Amino acid sequence: APVEPSSGRRTRIGVMGGTFDPIHHGHLVAASEVQGWFGLDEVVFVPTGQPWQKADREVSPAEHRYLMTVIATAANPRFKVSRVDIDRDGPTYTIDTLRDLRAERPDADLYFITGADALTDIFSWRDADDVFDLAHFVGCTRPGADMDPDTLARIPQDRVTMVEVPALAISSTDCRERQRAEQPVWYLVPDGVVQYITKHGLYPTPTH
Ligand code: ATP
Ligand code: MG
Image (cartoon, rainbow, N blue to C red; front, side, top):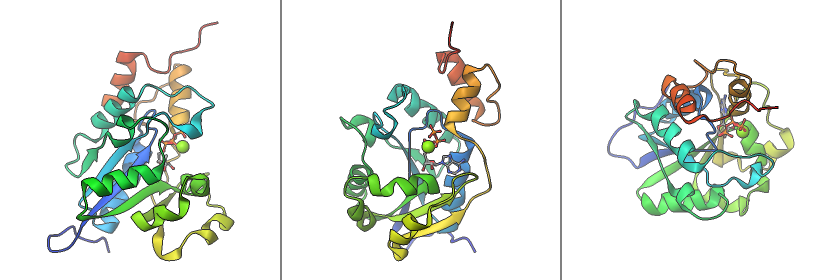
């Protein structure tokens, strides 16, 4: 059964890193599910700085991604947004995110929440071994993003838990493509994020 957040034990903080270009309901459902299952006191969403793994495409300015994340999480008292990655110069490495959050909250145990696909990238991370000392990892399976068994086998068993979240076949890539094609993104992202995208003209339709 889900663990009740309570006093008298160490604070548990979920950490959900992402580009959030834009944030969508897949991110929010995953965070909410993991919050409930692990009895997390809060979940901190951490938008990346200039993402080195996505150098192949133009990523929206960090302030837009940060503000969309704030809008999307505003109604949930357990959801917070951190600027640690966007305020740090250079590309974002998870090891730096976890070190900064631990320095801010030395009282807390950290649970790094990630899609199974992102967990597969873990061995391309700098200091991949050290990240497991800083946080427990929670890998969320999502449709079409199966974990490769070789990678799973290399991850320390006591440091990672795989959880199945309700299947939401939503990705930011699909949301951007829809917006560019003038197809609706309503109900894939929170209403306030739809309005923010429109207001700021994010993901414009290419002109020929
Ligand atoms: P993009 O399509 O641009 O890669 P994305 O939808 O994968 O975007 P990210 O910001 O890259 O979103 O993802 C942040 C984290 O959320 C990653 O750990 C990713 O695996 C996870 N995630 C993304 N979409 C889902 C989803 N539908 N269900 C569960 N986890 C998700
Ligand atoms: Mg992704």
